[in-house]
Length: 344
Image (tube, rainbow, N blue to C red):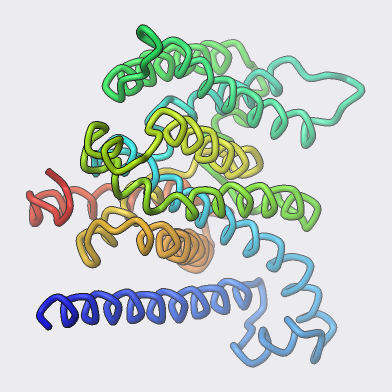
């Protein structure tokens, strides 16, 4: 009876968290859709979303704000679930989607495209393509370097990720120094920005993030076993090597898709899963989908705040705000909760 009651309470907490995060996401989406150079009410934004009301409102909501909000939801969801998976794989609440140096690899790809433009291909094509390619190349490079006698220890993965990430960061700094009048574009890309995205970009990013996320969600049970250690996971019938590689590829694919068009947005995949694990415990079957909701809500909230509170500064890169909010809050969490539920 006690066990049944405990399961019931756990399900109730997961359901409450789902309802709460869904409601917050819907609220933040409407706030962001209504944020414009003219005053739009919730009602105006809602009507315009479905094609009713003032023509100007419809243009603002559907053609200007709509693509940005969809991209923000996809990027936030992707970074949220990627962070949760990395934390499970490495059994470390400090892990993030960028722990293997993926952000540095993507930044190097973008900086390379800006520094050496291809005359017949516009930058808005080459920058995301190069960022995506180098992000994936970074993951495979780190994984191949980490192989020791047919094994890939997680500790070696982390160390190789730090080393490769540092190398790419140094190369980005070198390209930035040599970029001349293109330096501003490189610096701005590394700060993260949602504003330069239309529906065509969303139609590329959303399917990639959705496909990778579905693969990761389907492995929730195996990730629970792997959090107990590789030996315990093998005893439970989990092919640890196969699942780890599958999760690394899926997570890297989602992270690459997320950063390719918007740049590096930090702390989403670090803070959101961490908070959810403190509240709900370590069960990845619940944490992974909820990290998608929480990540999307966090990114859209930051995008709204960057436009509503800092309008005088123009377009404030969203990566600045996520770091300004995420870093202090994460430090607070670490101070208040030294021994989180589900981590040894």
